[in-house]
Amino acid sequence: MALFLCVLFLLLSSASACDRCLHQSKAAYFSKASALSAGACGYGSLALGLSGGHLAAGVSSLYKDGAGCGACFQIRCKDSTLCSSEGTRITLTDLNHNNETDFVLSSRAFMAMANKGMGRDILKLGIVDVEYKRIPCEYKNQNLAVRVEESSQKPTYLAIKLMYQGGQTEVVAMDVAQVGSANWNFMSRNHGAVWDTSRVPNGALQFRFVVTSGFDGKWIWAKSVLPAEWKTGVIYDSGVQITDIAKEGCSPCDDSHWR
Image 1 (cartoon, rainbow, N blue to C red):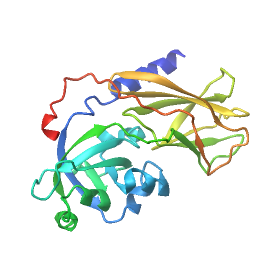
Image 2: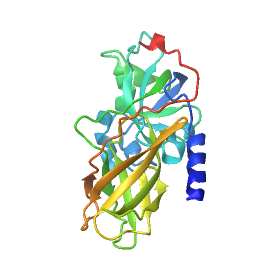
Image 3: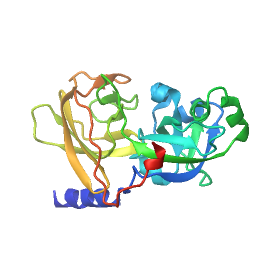
């Protein structure tokens, strides 16, 4: 337990602060959204259902070794003659290895930053100056979901992917136990939004998550998620949703000119 608390403290303290502040950078785009759906977060084709296909690859400081997968941002380009003041919402689904831009967007998201009728004009630029800030993810009438990955092999190995994570936090730790049991086994982040364990409890399974960003964290408990006869490739409703907006250990941000 002492080791777990030490690791948890390091996770909390290493989370980047001031996510909701306004950041200045550049953004490029992929010509095909499928390039992002095949990204490092591991969402696969399911990514195309997030944010209406407004997807993004983010640099390592946003990807956060996978903890940033599924994070939502408001982004707009700074050319007021070409782009709208509102911009568009995007969901992070991949890691951007090019540090020349903070984001590489799907072409749909890139065009959505433009004023009406000017989507093709912004595509011609290829790269634009942008400003962005993190915002809460909202999934109306949709709980946090768990997809059992095809690599899972009952009863020796379980890999799951977290989908539709709401709020403005990150999942930084995760445990699994048999429903009704207090014998929790920790899970590890395999990659992106995928967590796994080789210590799979018998029977129906419950999960608990540590969600955090900045300096604040809390446990979320999903009391009954996977049935005893869970199957690979199936998405299961966790029965809970994350709505927290994490506290941050930084000075208040001045983003009044965004509004």
